[in-house]
Each structure stands twice: as structure tokens, then as C-alpha cells.
Image (cartoon, rainbow, N blue to C red; front, side):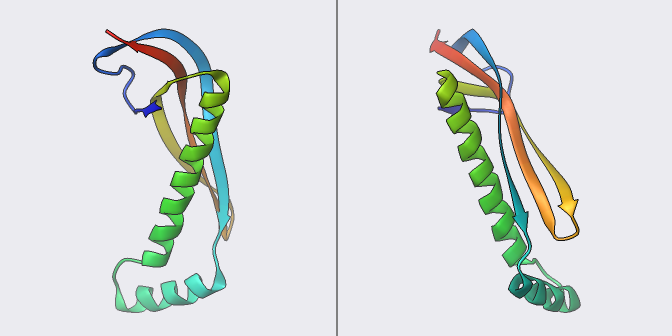
Length: 106
């Protein structure tokens, strides 16, 4: 599956657009990570626990979007975008969306 933020794929042409596909996940913070984050906030530096949590969330969202596109019969997804929103004080949603398409080499 080709996944790109671009509207076109070099060396391919879009032969059919199947529509919007998306994947999302909502993650809540963990008390253990919050304690480490408070300590990092005091001494400074990257809060690696949150970085890892967000990276895992993005990958899970991408996997879900790709599964959605596969169900539609797509072999590529163009115009991919990410969005993040807070659901409540300790939870956030990661949403990824794009256009499911069928492409063929030129």
C-alpha cells in the first residue's frame, strides 16, 4: 500500500478514487508516565514516555486507515493528513485521513 501526503504518486496515475478513509485512536495518559513527566518538567528535556505514546498512537491510526482502504480495494492512499484533539483533560485523539485510490504504473 502506497501512503503519501501528496495528491499524486510519481510514476503512477490514479485510475479510480474510492473515497475518504480514516483511522483513529484515543489514548489516555498513565499515572506512571505523568509522574515521570512532572520530573522531566522540573529538570527539562524531552518527555520520552509521551513521545513514545504518541508515536504508537500514530502507527495504530495509520494501520486502521490502511485496513479501511484495503477493505475498499485501494492500493494507495493520497492526501494523508493527521489531526490531534483533546477529548478530556487526560485523553487525546489521533486521527489520520486520506483519499483511497487505485493507481497503476505509467
